[in-house]
Length: 65
Image (cartoon, rainbow, N blue to C red; front, top):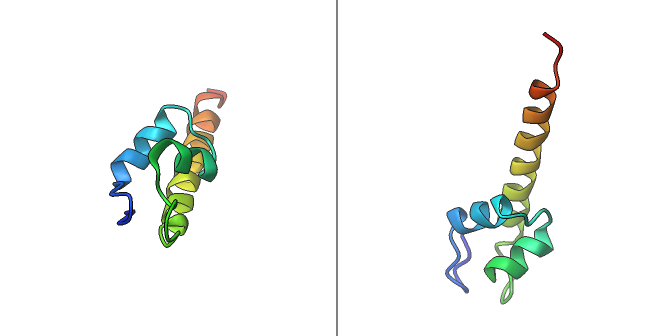
């Protein structure tokens, strides 16, 4: 995912799971997007995907039965 710092999608997902909730927090935690920045859109996509999944999970858990 990040060729410059050799950061994988899995490392980004682990950073989010460990509490990084923004693109900048993920970049600080993993080192992604520190050089050329070409991967920043992929980082953003993964962070947004996690936020959407978390939001959906909260809606389902809070649903009335």
